[in-house]
Image 1 (cartoon, rainbow, N blue to C red):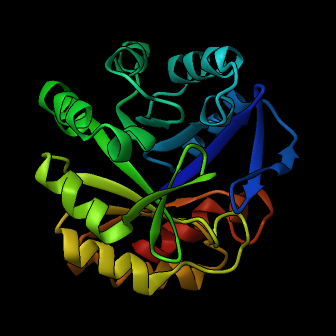
Image 2 (cartoon, rainbow, N blue to C red):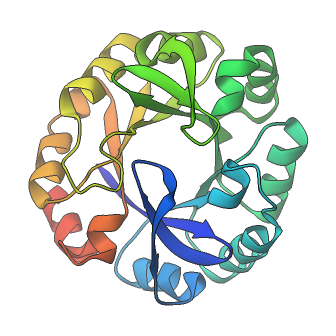
Length: 241
C-alpha cells in the first residue's frame, strides 16, 4: 500500500475543498514546494498534485509554474491531474516531469482521445473516476457523466488503461471515512489497479484499505487528514509496514 500525500493548488496556494465545491475551500499556510519537500523528508514515495484552477476552467498558469518548480525541487515521482483535456496538455506535463497524469472529464466525453493517449504514453496515463451515488461526475464534479463509475472503469480498462484513481465526491474533504464498499466494487469489476481517494480521516481507513490489496487497491491519496493533523505521514507509513 502506497500512501500518496495530496497537494491541491488554487491560485498557487495549497487548499482543500469540501465535496469538490470551489466556494468551500480551506487555504493552508506554507509554500507548496516546502510542503512537498516536507512530505518527501517524512518518507513519501510519490505526491499527488491537482490544478484546481484548470479543473474549474480558469487560468491555471500560476499553478503550472508552481508545479514546474515543485517537480524540479523534489526528487520523488509526481502524479498530476486537473483540466487535462488534450494530448498537448499531457505532453506539457510529461515534459515538465510528471511521472503520471490523471485524465478525468476526457475519459467520459472523448473515449477515443483517451485511447490515443494510452497508445502513446502507456502506463503514464491513469483515469480519475469521481463519483457521487455511484454515478461518474465530470468538469470539476459539477456535471453528471451519465455513466456509472463501474461501467466507466470497465470502459477505460478496455481502452488499455492500467490504473484509476477512484474518488467518492460525497466524502472528499469531509474527513468522513472512505467509501470502502464502492472502492472494492470498482476494483473487482474493472480488474484495474486502484488508487483510493476521498474521505480518509483516521488510521483505521488506512488499515481497511490495506486489506483490499487482493482486489487491486494498492495505494491511497491522503489530503485533509494530514493538513489538519489527524495523523502524520509517518503514522500512516508505519501502518503499512
